[in-house]
Length: 441
Image (tube, rainbow, N blue to C red; front, top):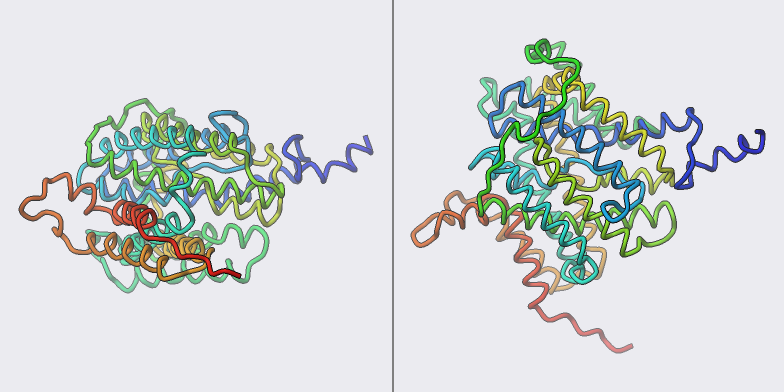
């Protein structure tokens, strides 16, 4: 008995075994805290864009929690449809620009239909990852991630100002609440320790939420009617297939598959001092696609690996699967409680904007780090500069692809979200432009 107790602290640094409760709960909750904002916020953004009712918005959040939990459990324990690695899978911000573009032009069922096609593309990518990977070096992937971050800034500022259509849009009260939230997040990220630091975004939102309560900005009308237990019904939102939407989201899935490779690699390097195997990479990406496909039938949004949780692993080197299973089970239970999801819908948009602008900034800087991870040359400058210029520029000029001669689908695929254009241009230029010759030693 004493021998087991002596070895117990080492279990958290091993894949198998169950750590003592005193370690399991705080280590698992740390991952819940780090992930929860990323899980619920895309659902809120999409629900608002698609004009969903309070009840449907609650359901969208509820399903997001469930999909995250199930995707994580498969990723941690399954083979072939999972990497078998300690990685949190959840609803991802990286898809948001394209989701909002599709939702604004069409509706939620069209998003879910495109998600099924995108998920199938991710599954194929996972199956052939070893052969396809060569087309997505860090220069290309970093350019697209950088573009994703840039494209999300207007969304954050719109929320900071109070949300589109709000009677007090741009009011000083909205900005004050958002800035208090942002200051709290930044302060905890840079001066906090432990759970305060890793959960800085969540704690910052709590600070902003409490301030909003004092200012009378929180509306609890949607909480009362919400039940205590509910199972999401399949096809509640419906599914539609629109070719242009499917193409644009499929491109984003490919890019996120590459990002998943990075997250899986960071997990194994940071926690196990090795690179992931081809089988682990394949299973991890297949999980991303399969979870998205299944989730679409219930209203769950696209999934990807959570870099913020990968960051925790690289810092504390805790890789025990039971820790991640506990975090997934907490999210699973929360996903069955509509009352909990309804409370989350009461978060004022200014609070969401103040918290998420820091997330979007992090995404942008992640792209820059990937771009500059290798020597930055004139060729690199051309790839990044032209891809971002065309991607962002086209979407900033309304109607630039809707003139004479352009069919309607062209604007949907290339004019709605900068991510698709940036990805295609970056891939093409990286293949076409000659590589610099290495100077002889």
